[in-house]
Length: 172
Image 1 (spheres, helix red, strand yellow):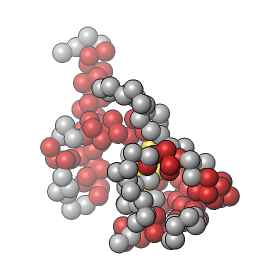
Image 2 (cartoon, helix red, strand yellow):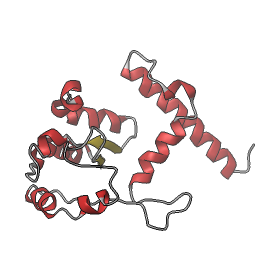
Image 3 (cartoon, rainbow, N blue to C red):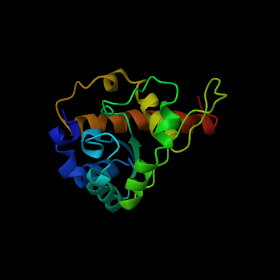
Image 4 (cartoon, helix red, strand yellow):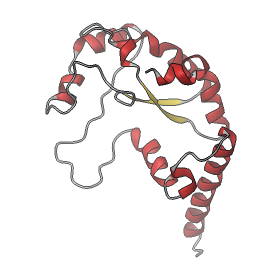
């Protein structure tokens, strides 16, 4: 099941990124379609990301690629202790990505992680999702129209910003 193709995001990415930008959203999490990138073990073709990369660049969006958002190759055991190191050290994947002008940067948890640890770049989007879950209406997709959901996100983040502004100015 290819959710990116199923939703049309592979062909409408520029429109999607521009619509997000209209609402002030410039950092976007997107997924890698492993069935296209690594159709057979050890052979990597990152060209399926190129239309999305070009669309993001044109829209002025920063994409945080979630490598396991829509799954992972069948031959990979994500529960093995060496998964992250093995994935990060895979020279074939990095070489194939570089051939398309893509630089792979794996963000992993520090070995001494205790409590909250700030990870580079990713925290912006993840923190925003965490804040949005404070509003019950946004936790589940009840809305029939994307514009209604976008409006509710705007209201939720406006409430959060107003609360921060009030605290900064010494208000309630």
